Image 1 (cartoon, rainbow, N blue to C red):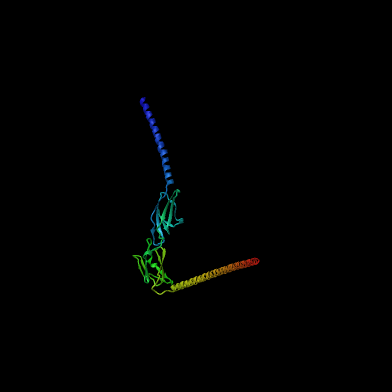
Image 2 (image 1 turned 90 degrees about the vertical axis):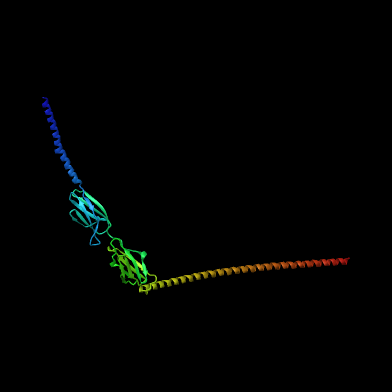
Length: 315
């Protein structure tokens, strides 16, 4: 009996274990696997590998290769340089973008599940700076000018260098040393403008002037000299007019001062004459008073003499 019970209990436990394994294998694991696969494809995102821009036969165009690694097919691919759509071609999983300038390149790839990968790349492959003329090492000799040019990106286009003098004549360099960048022009006038370009089309200008040229003056120089002489003469005439007007103004003020001084002197003379007349009048009155006093004294003395003579007679 006990053996039968043990057999039954072991058989029941085996049934329970097999039922759990069956559920795990037939329901749980498939559910997990299927949902994992679904989640994997739902969240699958393309991967972008952006290479460096390379030169082409056209110096104004660069190409950029982008490799897209994606399990799912790519639904949409775009490349925008500073917001402007760029042309591209597709070769398997590679996208070749044509570039025409520097700036921020925004690349985006979207797969059929809607997941998108974006990459931003700064493009600095294009030469947008003009050549440089070394102003510190310019040589102005007798009848020539020599200077040095350089360009660190696309390089100087020595074949297109030219100059224009004051008469408007187009001149070509007399000597070019591409190894050192030295360029020489003949300079038979008082001014020369040179134009230097690089291989990307950027251009720089340089103006060279001799204060005293050993060569005869050109027509432009003569016209400039005439204009300067005319300006100087007009300036002298204006200065002379200004001086004359200032002199007349000064003379007028001086005349007014003299008149005022003369009138003051006349008034002073009149006052002095009046004072003298008053003084003479007072002296005259004083003399008259003195004479009347003397007369009265004489009369008094005469009266006294008369009375004394009368007294002597009575005695």
